[in-house]
Image 1 (cartoon, rainbow, N blue to C red):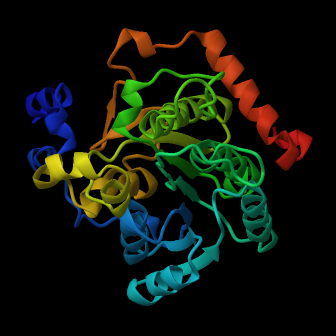
Image 2 (image 1 turned 90 degrees about the vertical axis):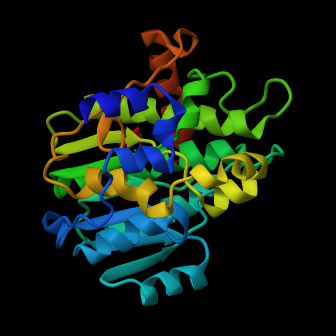
Length: 314
């Protein structure tokens, strides 16, 4: 199995449903150890996020499902076996994210896990009412602010876990500070998305280092190629070509569930996972960043978030 896994990891075949099958991804495995844990999942009303929410709730977790569509949240609650608590928030709005976090903290509920799953890919540069490019706001700044705001609850509930849901597309892009909001050159939605996904991996690595010793771990992962509504809407040509090879949503969600729920993953920290195994974070030399760039990136994120956070939280 190690040989097969290693061979798959050197090709795109590992991202497909065949990769999941050859690696014996078991979407039916149960994790009783997650019972009574409270886990927040963003983008929980569809696709991979919904599959994570359904499986964690079925295993006994209290799932705090975040989405912007109240009707979809109501459907998730009614359709899911287990406890799902809906939270309505537009995750492209940093103000809405601040209210979400503040409302949660006011409940004094524990928080044992945060799955930063929400993500968008669009093909026309769009700026939010708050002045941010929307892909950056949704996929990166909002997740940074939400995580920082919820850290007191995560630390108080330790051991607890943060999972950043990235993408294999991040391999195509280096870390950037100057072009995080796609201000340079002609807008390319696929590249804008991949840049945020690269940055999410760096955030997980840096948070793992910063939070060492607190009982809070941070990891990132990529789900492979999954047949979601987002793929169908944003990448129709890709979906048309790869459709027979795409994973289902449960297969894409498996590693997130494993990272969040299993005792085996309790010590996972800082690494980038796919199909329950740590994977390289770079496939090309040109994407490898210098430590100084990482430092500038973290400073930039703290600066952008500072208007939304108390000084002690940045």
